[in-house]
Length: 510
Image (cartoon, rainbow, N blue to C red; front, side):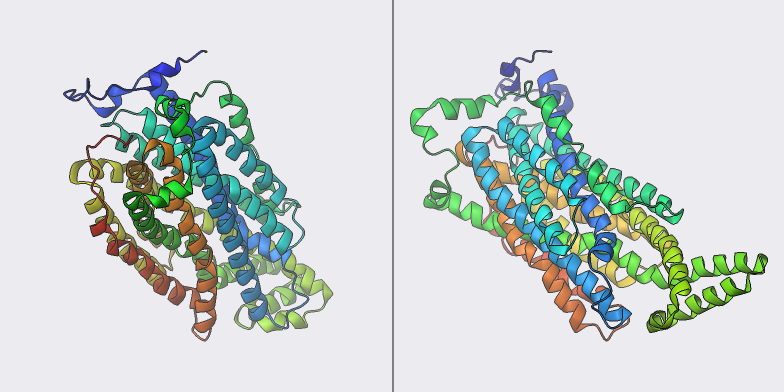
């Protein structure tokens, strides 16, 4: 099918008095571009969520227990390893965002999108072959390069193609559909968790990363059909303007653009740090607070079976394991057969905990879907800045509530979707607002700067959280206190809103 790139332009002046719903303003090519950009970002988010859900299991395998004297220090080391891998991944994300954002302005949105999709697909797949923390972290850094670059070029592409009135809705929908990628990762993790519970011989987290390599097929599909936006083509054909495409120097020489970039950076960092340093650790929270209950449940089920079979040796071993739930150090005194029994039952416990982590992720993204699309609709009615203010305050309150109160299963379906709605709505705001702050020649560059430099800051977030957990280590559940403290970052975004422009109902800057 040949698609005429001229259809990608929109005569907004002729549509100024058009009162039809926003989706009636879109041509077939508009829908094609939205679909391609949405799929690229959807698979991007699939990769992110696969990492989040696979992280505890990966750390358990990549950080062996031999070098640690007791179960508590081993647990802290593995969680710290997960924080290191997360920080390195986010740093790669930020680096890739800055580089590919600039490249998107220089060589085009469509070309750069294909490169980023291939990059994050390749190294997601290679993550499954890691043997230790540091090679795993290297693969995550290289994956992050592609993940970070995809966002800016995708939203710049959609923003430049769509009619002005439809732009916030389409960008909100673009972000909302990313929740499908996140939920897909949760269902993959759920299925593999059930398989692990049943004794699957392969490491589920390695299989998850192999699945993450599939999006490379999307790049092959879009390679010939996706065209560059007319606004970018005009800028690229202008000999004088070409010299200024994707120039960070130009971005910071202009006082107004410099102001937009720096204030946008603070606004973006507020949500990025809040999500990656707090929100995306909620599946870990549910694993942490439910581990004792799940272990007790599994051991009691197996003890009942052993009693029914009148297997006295197995009854004795499982009773020892039940005792070890309350006194973890006893696991070091088990003889070899007991250790084997423990490993088998531990697989069942981990599989059940994976279910809970998957349910938590699904709940987050159910809320996120409606929050992200809702941000676009509300921003078009009351303006970008008021909508951001509401979302930032709501994200703070909902996140504190989850980390302070979340414990029981029913709360996952009540509190966590609200948190996902509030936290992730901010990211629809970034997709809508940041492209509106910069001209065509610097749109991808400026958007990347606002969204991705904040990730360098966010890269330290998990390490700060790790230090807070250590500071609260004498408490029963240090992750709760660390999460509540880190939630304050959402309020930082409120400080810069009064100094940023309102862009509702305005065309993109030329």
